[in-house]
Image (cartoon, rainbow, N blue to C red; front, top):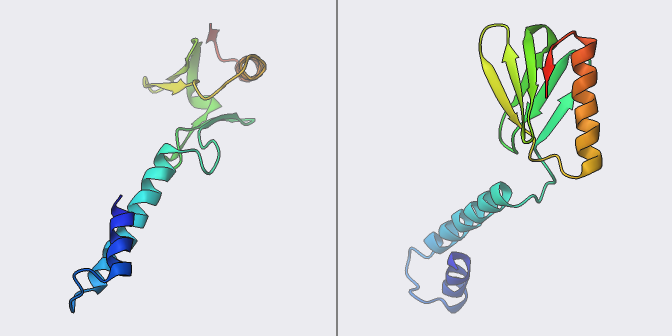
Length: 129
């Protein structure tokens, strides 16, 4: 709506004064804001959340502009597997809950559970389901 209003002001020269450049400034800020909202609310760049099992780490990324969380296998004391989350209990006493809601489909859930079990057995980490 802001974009349409600003474009109509520019096209019709309504309120043409010596400060007409503010219409262009407002148009740019409106487009930037619209892009910001789209990036955060629509998956236009694909799925930006993931859970990855590397040989020595579990890497979790929550969203597009969120930092990655890497958990070394040596620092993980126990793994608790729930229906919608994977809880990591670390050796320093902290625990982190990783959301599994981005894993869709039975085949992918089964593959992810197999990866968790393989990671736990490889590094001798107790796994509770």
